[in-house]
Image (cartoon, rainbow, N blue to C red):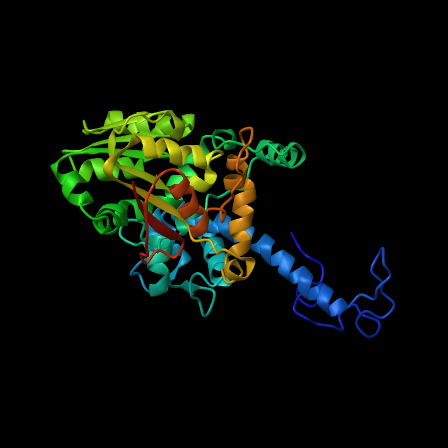
Length: 387
């Protein structure tokens, strides 16, 4: 696809195609105000950069999926033929991919022939096993399907959102791939040890509930680390629980179980020593009811670990977030949509579970202790809540 004038107008060439001073004779339809054509060009470039981001996102997914980034680690400058040999892929396709990556600043190239993955890119694009900075897994290679787009458009009219299952089976995989590194690498090693007395109880043996467990990454992580404890995952998503149960059947674990149930279906009597809700309360249609159910199901000396998106209390606070537009767009597409998928849904959205709202909700549910834990997680904050 070509964009007429992209080499001149979009680059800020104010004389390209202009017969006189910027805006001369041009008027805004509707109110007749003069148009500043330089501002129009700059605005158009900003809009096309979002389209560029969409296409580069696809290339990042392919680089991750095909092992191209991993093959570049430690290779130094490498050409398309060498990378194609390393990966078993077609050279012509690899060369065009490399050029797109160099154009986007994701790999280095001085001549368009030799390419190098810079050291700072390795933990972000290539290391999904040991790096908490890994981000390539958040890129899925495609936008929403036409059916989902149609359903979202209808949601704007009806006010009723889509459940995660209505996004299709790929939705569960997308969430897992994006959140996986922190769950695998930090939950057991860094986060649970911050909860006073919890690691010791897990070691001796206790009962754990992961509410909103998705495909079960946290359930598996805790069950494997603490074989004396029994860990149960709860989630209303058919697609997510199907994946979790299949993996459980293929594993050797005997201390885990999954239930396709929402938070409100937790036992009415004190049952669990630890309850976790990891990046999911803001997605729930009824988070207050979930908090009440967790309070009933938690033992008097138990703990509730809440992981939530870092959200400011005001627009000014949130405006400091360099990816704020992505956060709100994600909210429309998934988080807020899920939270409005049932009658009377709270519709909090991605940035809706602020600290003050979480603390007030927990207090209303009968919890007396609310502690904030800050880990080197750029996206999330963690609350430790006790009866």
